[in-house]
Amino acid sequence: MNTPFRILPYLLLSLLITTPAKAAAWAGSSEPKEQARNFYDVLEDLLGDFEYDLRNGDVQGLKDLSIRNIAVSENIPVSFKQHLDLVVTERILKTSKTKVIQCLACRAKKTSISGEQVIITSPETNQTELSRLAKTAGIENFMDLSFNYQPSGMILSLTTVDPETGAIIWSRTYNSETSRAAAVRRGVDFSQVDDSRRAAEYKPNLQHRIAIYINQAPNLTTGSTNLGLGYRLMERYDNRKKEVGFELDYFYKVSAITNSTGTENIAGANIWRSVNVTLLFTHAWNLIDVEENFNRARGSIFVGAGGTYASGFLGGLVRGGFEWRLAKFWAVSVYAGYRPAAVAFLAGTEAGSIEGLDYGAGINFLF
Image 1 (cartoon, rainbow, N blue to C red):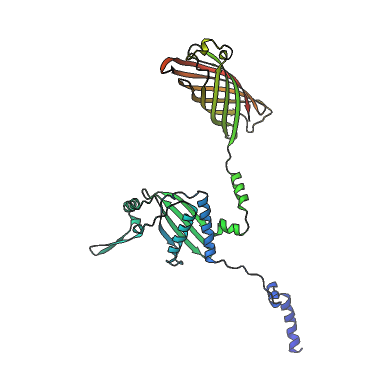
Image 2: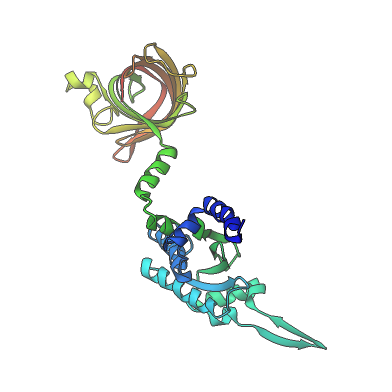
């Protein structure tokens, strides 16, 4: 067989195993290559993330700030430190009302000779000297920067420090691989991301209620039967098994409504008339199973501590009680409490002492 016919099978086999990339090259086309991003474009993304935190008030320790230390990786020229200082300062001044103070003495180094040794010192290693310089220049906080560049990405770290104690106030690292600004460029809708993150965060489960009470309470002369209106705001936790909050009550003596000439309406004889308010800090334990069932009556034990203010009177109150929760929005409660002795005054004159049991019942609407 002639030589041309001998190499023909090898040529056909080569065509069969040719990769698509080779075929495209033979056809005069090539696959699109991913374009490398500019160094300063990526840096702009990191600074954009920092600016986002500045706008949202997430950066702490910005009062009368001075940029102190700037560290860069070995593959970055030293001259880049000044550029980084300027661009970070620009973002701070642009986005916040912070005053950025230059402290040249804070970065200065001193050389001294001790015998045959040359000693180099700087305020960075002397907390007392650094604190003195900060007070002289009116600096409230220092900021330190660290910049690391690798072919796979950039990392910018920022830290704010208290010059008095050296305590770190705030610190955050921005990575080009997880940059918020870069994600926006790719079309990520961060309004949806933020909403989903907030949905995953803890949301208080608040319960409001309005109550109507019939109450028996001590008064200046004898015990007083009162009608009351109460409002309670509680936050539920521990899978709705516990509640904590406050209660605000107002009481008015029943006989004062119909008898306008009785002793209960004589000035100074009745504190449960006109302006009075009872405020209690309350905690409740709900007697429910793993899951609350609104088709069943449930019990709840509650305790509260606080006091009552009326015209010329201020006294304490400790209260505890039990309630039956019916369906989802209704509850019936009973309670009993004790009022320690407290003196009521009228026009600066002692009108009597109030002390004794305080008890009653109520109908509650929960919402």
